[in-house]
Image 1: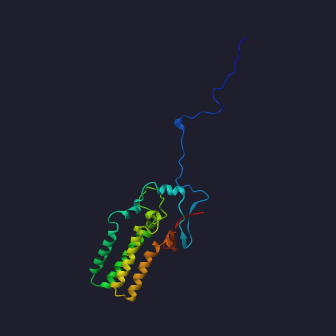
Image 2: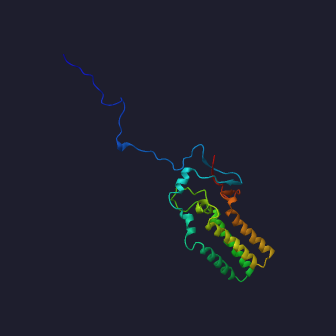
Length: 215
């Protein structure tokens, strides 16, 4: 009698083929998942506030030191502000049509404009090292990770105030020049205060719509 043994399939499950390790592939994931609970949107209101970063964004911010903001702690970073103010004053003094009062006022206004653009107008960083985690923050908000009244921020807040007082004194307290110097001072001081932290003023056709993170 011939024994007929059933044919046993060597595969553990019919139709199942094991993949070799070389064929296994992992799909990439986004560093900033756009889930339904937290998404980036454009603010259409005149005044908006940038919301705190997500956990993933904070991780990207901590990848390495923020070179765009940490330079304010380097040696000479504070002195350069005084040097720039002195150079501006000398430059305007060389123009014969400018009196001493006008030259001090122009020095104040010029420094304020440059300071505002640098610390409050420009967003993000010029370095691509953190997957755009700072794209929604200006330099002032990036300094010291947004902490308020640190030594660096106290200095940067005091410089325009001191320059306003000096410009007012050397303009002989002329009312017109006083108003100009005061407005210039407020323009750069108010954005540095805690009440303006992450606050955006969107002017139609003059400023880009701010991208904010919200629910």
